[in-house]
Amino acid sequence: MDRTIDNILVTCSVIVAFIGLYFVLKIWLVWKRIDMNVLKARVFLDDRFLMRNWTYIFIAGAFIALIKVLQLLSLSGVWIEGTGEEIILDLMGLAVVVLLVLLVSHWYKLVYSAIGSSHEENIRLTSTNR
Image (tube, rainbow, N blue to C red; front, side, top):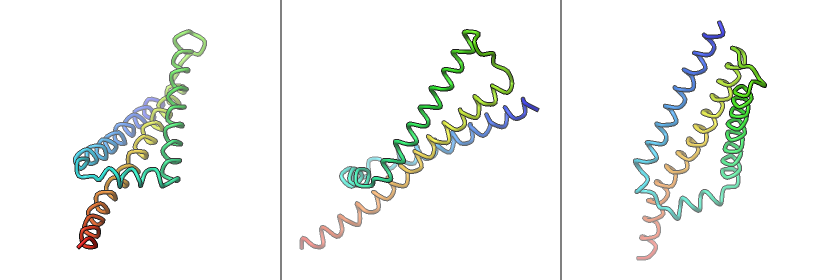
């Protein structure tokens, strides 16, 4: 039973990781078409976006640090890792992957909104300059 839960958690982590890779690939493919000034303005003028990014990064980093501390304790013999502890570590690993994918998905939305608006703003600017 514990092995089944472990397999489910690892499978979920892999699926979520591939979703994150999809978002990263989509961002990478359109990166050269982005107006960097518009992107910078959108990032730094949206307090919610910045706060959400830092929160995701902080929580993911805390989980990674906790995972490594538990692994160090296990290696030193202070904490003996069993099946229940392995599930906890896998849950924390899944949480890290989910947080990173959430972070990338917010960047994906922002990048794609900067593409559309930069094109619309360029049209508006060129039509008003005539």
